[in-house]
Structures are given as C-alpha cells and as structure tokens.
Length: 226
Image 1 (cartoon, rainbow, N blue to C red):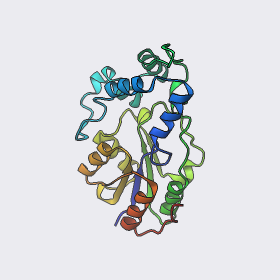
Image 2 (image 1 turned 135 degrees about the horizontal axis):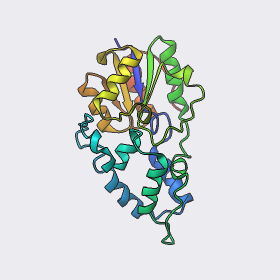
Image 3 (image 1 turned 120 degrees about the vertical axis):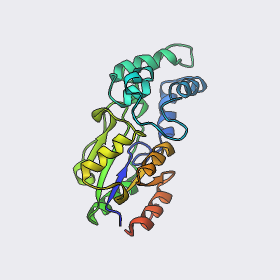
Image 4 (image 1 turned 30 degrees about the horizontal axis):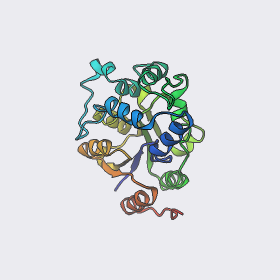
C-alpha cells in the first residue's frame, strides 16, 4: 500500500514548460530556432539518455551551467548573463540578461486539478513531498503548508534530479521507504531514476492521464478533469 506521493512542480503542477517558454520567446522577441539550438547544446548532458546520474560529476559541474544552476552552485544572474551571451533577438541583438529566468517562467500557471489531488491525498492520510529542479528558488510558496509534508528544491539542497541522492533525501524527509511512494514528473529520465530506487513512477503527460493512473494506484477518487 502506498503511503506517499513525490511530485515535480514545473510542468506537472503548472502548465507545460513549453507553453511558458513560447510566451517568453515571443515577449522578448528571441530568435526561436537559434534559442532551441543553444538550449540543445547546453542541456546535452543535463539528462543522460538512461537517466543515470549519481552526482559523481559534482566537482566539475560548473562545466555544465544547467547542472550548476540546478544545484545552486552558480547564481541566477551568472546563468542569465551566460545564456544571454548565447542568444539573440529577432533584430540580431543580445537580449536583456537581467531577470531573464523570471521572465522565462512568468507564464507558469497552476493546474488546479493537480493541486486538488494533493489535497485529497493528504486528506486520505498520505504524505506528500515536492521534488523540484530549480532555476533559482523563486517559487509561489503560498499555501505550501497545506499541500506538502516536505519540500525539496534542488538549489537549496545541492542535489538535482535524476541523482539518486535527491530521491533518498526526499524519502528521509517524509519518513517513508521507496516502495511506499509514487513519484510524478514530466521528464522521463527522472521517472526512470526513481523507479531504479524502487519508487513507483508516473511519467506525466497531461493531468487527466496522470490522475487516472494515480487514482488506480492509490484507490483515492479524484474529481474529473474538465
């Protein structure tokens, strides 16, 4: 019987990352094809093909700015400057680096059925834990005491998904064993990493599918997604 739910934030409790990024690219008039080429290069090693990453690269993490940002090893402003140097606007200029990360995620909007699920899960006596890879720690935290028994933000704990140690930290935080928990994430590499530790995993694609699968696993009814 499951006793806990570990859950990602961006793209699971919010609208998809791609939606937020699309809004930001248009607002800042970023050259879209060039942006995706740059990000493909920067994120190349952020998620190994099989999700295997155990933190052994921590000493050289600054070679990968995304690793470093997510572990809190570089300041957001440093990352923004490095990213802005690589990007260009539609008129060929460098975009404004200041506040870039906040603008990138400004369109993250909550998906209310997923929040309703967390309330139902806690009301049923299960424990919940947020496990999020952060690009800075600027989260809308109002009401989190109602939603989560534990909060693990990568930049605050110096670990990132899909490293096994961040999952072990989350389990310890809420006092549960791996086999007692379900983990939900929109990045498959993270889900695979959790499964290797014995945590049941749901690869989130859309709220309706995720909630139906979670309802079956937990035997807790959730309101239908409209």
